[in-house]
Length: 505
Picture 1 (cartoon, rainbow, N blue to C red):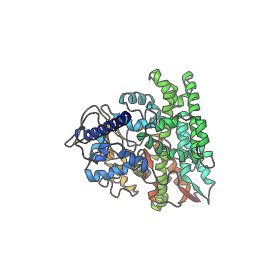
Picture 2: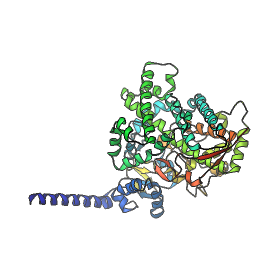
Picture 3: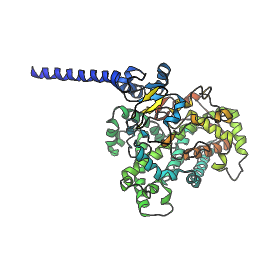
Picture 4: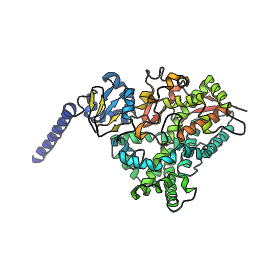
């Protein structure tokens, strides 16, 4: 009898607690006055339903909610979202202290990395240590690495005349080889693999599921990471096995590079991000293997499918539109010679090529998810006072597809960037974010600076000059946003099937 009473009391206490919590979140919480769905104000599982059950649909749902509730809405018990582009420059600015929202970024399991670390001051110190490594002079000095991989891919493709192959998988191999060689000085040579490392591409695309799930089920990520790789290899599919083998190799390479960088100042060791960290003024705690490996893993990973997604979208549109293709060929030919391909610095001076790449970045920015920021001061949006410490986010993709900023937003139109009125609004174009947390190497928009831009300039110019493809079994929507994988999740994934119909002279 006493046991039954105890259970009744426990149940009653739980009910009372949750009733009180719901009442507080709906009526007494500092964000209670902000518009939005009540279920979102009550629990994060409103977002969890769209993230986990429906597979990354909360970004799309947020866009729908703004149509109902207005430009500023409450999207969880603790977080606000703003869709008004005029506020972008206020939220993502270079002055002040701006923290990332740890609930979102901790799900990656790399709290000590520059990219996913939340604290403003720690990020500032870490970024200062490695920023020179990603500067434009640094990328130019390593341009030969990119040229080697451009040539290698072109040679592989040239042997496929008359066949249909997965150009999308080849693009992923290209970006991975570039990232690994540029950042850790190791050649993984995925461009040499018969299938271009297709399994690893699939696994990389699927990482978004892992992140979305861990956001809402906090033990999921740590539990999966705690499983010994040997056990995981026995249970995993081929794609996951490829990913696990890559992680093992990357971890060992980082150990080796860390050992060399710590004891040597030879020119080869200086060409890695590890060397930049070890010989920086960061404290010794920031130079441990675990911290350095988090940095290597996140920085290289950021250069994999983000750039590849954008290139697949661009290549689809270029080879599906004869006018765009011909204009590019004419422009690139004007700066090319048979024995000396144009440099990145020469290519970035070409207006139509730049416009084509910019349009691709508009429709396929690096991040699909909202980027919430936290400041220790109140923010003001119109008549709304946003309490200090509140996570406030905006979504670049929603700004990039705003009809008022970009008429006919889902159409691929490079000419919109040739027109002077379109080029006059750089504040509404932020494919690599903006402010203190802008992606490494992206200090300003024009001319575009970063490894990603260099890759896209050099590869697109080479493919357009040398090959004619017929894209098969695909539509434009296959390469547009379909789900939030943190990066852009598309229906096509890493696939872009192309038939090589002509090898240009």
